[in-house]
Length: 481
Image 1 (cartoon, rainbow, N blue to C red):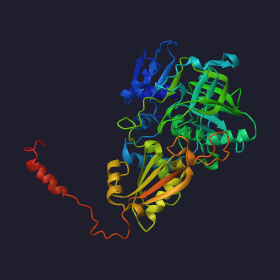
Image 2: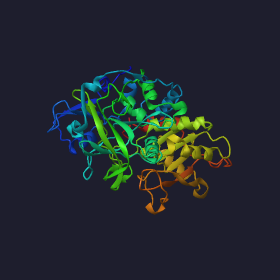
Image 3: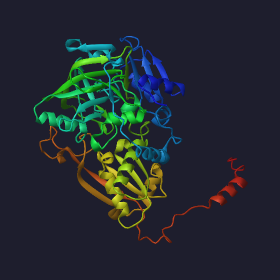
């Protein structure tokens, strides 16, 4: 079922029992802890100190296997693991751009503010963790236009709330938004930007997907395909950038060359980040719907036993799988991404000497897999890449470390990744005082070598038919009936 905006999607999720409504919670820490308790989405209202109707939809990305595909333009019988990843990979092969449609008006223009009337503090922006400032994200999208190609880019980049009309922005090295900001900075021109803070899952998924932008494809084209209809957009009065007309909250602004402000520290997937200076967005216009809904991601714990401990990132796995196939890797049986993309596991039917190493190297460097990646593990077809216990068994029992592990130097990184700061190359790099950042990656070939004699490297199994026979006979005695 197609949907036009976040409100239509919320109603559809509510109908299948995937939504909780909470009124009166505190925006400071309490709302985030509520989200940690439940795997479902939570719609907050009546925050103390804010008008009724100023709402926050949290945990937008939780249970996406259930909510996104049941309520989107595609139906899928699989809800987890490699079957879901394969199904989405096959779906990606059918992608055809659905360009946005420009309109003159829309619900986003129900409330309009310019200049001194702009006030980002009017919204109940939550604080997620003790010791962390309030920030906008990461359930939003940032819209920019490449000054060289004219392509419109959507990306989700952390934005700290500095004051009522100023927000910091951090786009990591190599991300499209960062490349665009660097281009404007080198031209000594302000970088126009639109931030949309209340978005539906189609826009959010498009904003967080590592598209390769073949033929100038924009994430807006991808969002239209996901949602089954063109995204309606209004051209911003201050920036000329497209603003989704049915979004909840949006603001226009510009990033001035060289202007930075200290921000952080933030709770990141790799641990706590340090306070650092990052570029600043000066907001010139603010738009929002009546009774606006701010979309926000919070409540995550990334270290076990937190709920994000080893969740399979099936969308990323599907995109890595597709890009590997397009690069010519044969007989891929499955791909799974873990730990916010720090670990990728690839299962193949190992056909020839060098095949498994080829798969690992390409997985480590394809666009969807390379950013921030630390480890790629390649396993045989009998190992489910989404089952981390099976994967670790293969690493422990099917590898000889000297042969199996290959270290790659100077790969795509972020300062958020775990690395020795002394190893950062001191080279000017765009707008970031941190200079250029590299990291190493490890490719672990856990496939049985082609030359192994399978007669004496065969796995040990108990006969399943005999096991069932014994279970039928002795199960009642052992309390297993």
